[in-house]
Length: 400
Image 1 (cartoon, one colour):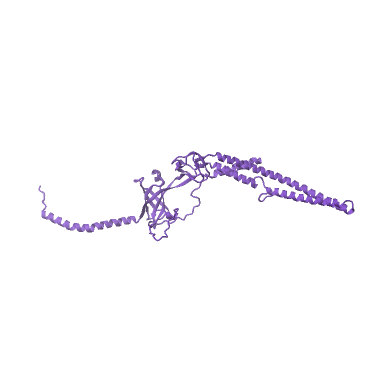
Image 2 (cartoon, one colour):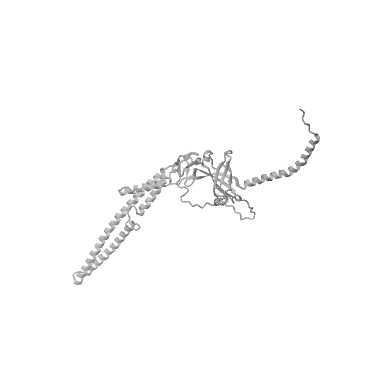
């Protein structure tokens, strides 16, 4: 079987036609193709905004001591999981035990002093009654001497002596009444005529000092205020002196993490809380995470910096500012892909959903965070003070 032979003239004609059409097609078709691709990308980009200025964030608590002292034990290690109430640090308690013993002695001394004041007040009252009887006797004697003087049965010198004795008795009565009033005022309490031992100002002041000493002693043990994970534990070592208010370590609160994505102000026009987000992390390049917008920051980061930018100058140049947008993560995905604070990522937000509000306006009825870890030491100190006072009074302490 013989194949059909192509005429060289026809082949040359076809090539000539293609050469004539190819150049116009490339000059017109390629720009049209690029334009169509650009329009497609623009249409897709109009439905989302993205940024690579985004990081993993988590609440953290800076742990510091309420008192100063020497560290005798550190109860946690780096990245250790802890629960609220776990012991973090122990401070040498001996100096505070001595202070507490001194405060307890001062409390006992104050109660003894109040008892002595009460006894003194009772004695002064008896003195006043005796002096009043002396004044009454002196008045009777003066009247009798006056009658005898009128009838000539006594001398004027004896009558004048009776007058002097009456004046002296009245002076002693006034002095006794002043002493009694002074003793009574030492026992007086607000709203009462005589203070009970517990309510007397001297005992109250000693009780407050003792309360503070007991609280300081209990503060030698530093507890975790919240559950979470310990961090920067190398900042405190056994034998080290720590001071009140100086940070010793940090606690990463719970397992709740979120993304702080800093979007340009030009990207926020159509952004709303509730919109879906897609997160791509460098740590997990093949496993994007899902999220949604929770809130949009109240101001740019520069407004909350220690030294806010001062733009009232002649060489100011306008630049697009960025606002932090909080994005919540899917807990199930976070459990499969553990995150660490500070990791960077790319965040894209789908802005097609426009039924949400720009700002959340739902008021909170309960605090977002609370702890009762610090209440226990104070209650224990109060109970111990009540026990001491009740023991000194010879009765059982009232339940609290």
